[in-house]
Amino acid sequence: MDVETRIELITRLPTEEVITPSELRELLETKETPVAYNGFEPSGLAHIGTGLITALKVKDFTEAGVKFILLLADWHAWVNRKLGGNMELIRKASEYFKHVWISLGVDPSKVEFKLASEIADQDYWALVLRVAQHMSMNRAMRAMTIAGRTMREELPLASYFYPPMQVSDIFTMKVDICQLGMDQRRANILAREIGPKLGLWKPVCVHHHLLMGLQGPRKMGYEDDELLDVQISAKMSKSIPSSAIFVHDSPEDIRKKIRAAFCPARDPNNPVMELVKYVIMRDGKTPFTIERPEKYGGDITFENYEELERAFVEGKLHPLDLKNAVAEELIKILEPCRRYFEQNKEAKELLMELSSVQITR
Image 1 (cartoon, rainbow, N blue to C red):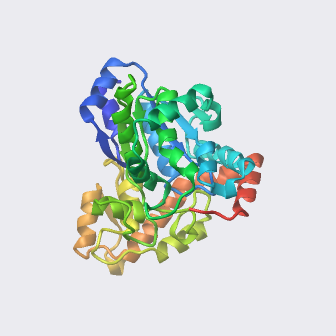
Image 2 (image 1 turned 90 degrees about the vertical axis):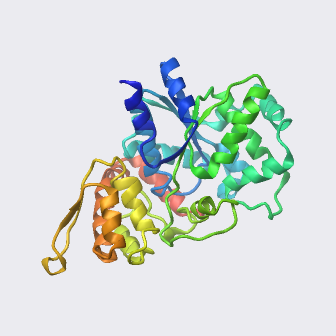
Image 3 (image 1 turned 180 degrees about the vertical axis):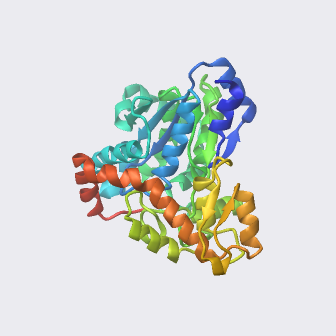
């Protein structure tokens, strides 16, 4: 596969930012099998932001000939007191997330699942301290917005280890490409700054868009940049179930949630339009047909997202027709996951157990 095709796959939506495009190209031209990773605190249930979006990007990267590591950050979840700091539950959540991604098409023979505790040996913790020597308290606090916290909150001392740990993950696993959400870009930028100071490399960053929760846009002051603040503040969250489509939601639940989603007429800045842009029509090549009664214009097919957005803004596409079509498409996309969790005994038991646990942000 030529470099141009590989770059097209890696930068396909929902990729939003590459730091830097020239470094990515050089990496693909000089290294046969680069290593990329994405990391997750295993806690609670997977919604389409953590489950589906991750699966889509992992498949893009592996198709482009990149080795991909999915880091299930159990130590990080414990530091952040996820699942009450119960490590047994956190480890079960790790196994559950593996099932989620496999059910959505991730080939386990092409990815490596790692627990953070598997890489956290003496050398790792020594690197955490070395990284911390090059990180001010202020930079650490700013990077901790990735964990859904604000700088104004009083945090336990353990929380301040989080950013040095995330930077150390990258170098311990010998990662060339950090493929994470826009909410984690601060930690990745720190890795690019600190790596050369330690005689290490500067990783390429490929950040993807964060799907908006169904409640619509909001601002909470996570970032000075207003657009990024809205993206992080409004992202889909497992701790607000009504705002999230979970990967194993029933068709009835998906229809109900989408119908109730924020989607004002003529305003494309809403979660339903995002689902079209970043999931349904993300490759720019797949047409999307919206079925409508003849009295409302009949069925209409859009060849690309720009066409659909233009029709919506001009009032030629009603929000309800859009919602109905998006719900049915999501039901089809998530059907393999629902079937997998019905048929796989271990996955089903993990889902049942985690469903009964109180989820925190």
